[in-house]
Picture 1 (spheres, rainbow, N blue to C red):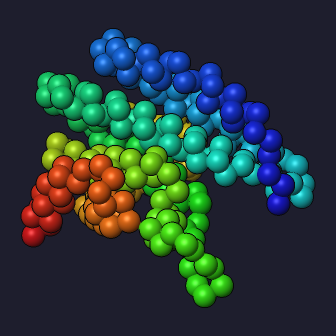
Picture 2 (tube, one colour):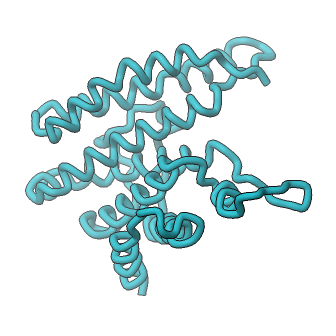
Length: 235
């Protein structure tokens, strides 16, 4: 397997960074903000599409993006959709008028954050691996390699909560009104089980923050409140 150079993915990340921050700073208030979010998601999907095309059209080719680039691409898409949903979610009238769009953006955001969390394999700890810092070993075995991984867990949980609270049935939508702009075979049928994903990600977040990261300033109050809602909603 041949790992692709960093430059194509890194260039896209650099190009989109300014526009992402501008949208966040503007609170997505402009009428064209949703279209701009879609355009940025599309740009951030280009490196993966290009790799797929290369592998399809060049016999024997097995090109991949480097892990850190792929992880960052997923994170940037998921985090952008989280920020969009977080901001417009405070405007009740917007949700009422655009419920399917809101639901689809939540689905796409959770999808990318989950892919980001699964990009690297958790460390398998056995008798052949020795760690002086057991807390670090615990984090790596849970797939937590940075603060961003913890934020991704919390973002996933919040987006699942919004889907269940604000959308009619809390189920994923296959409409084309959302923020995702990948080919049909990649963007359709991403049925996110919001209830289960929300509980799983937030339980891991709480476990890690109160376990190996206990006393390091990670607050779990909101995560516990959402977990209570999710568990009550499942009864």
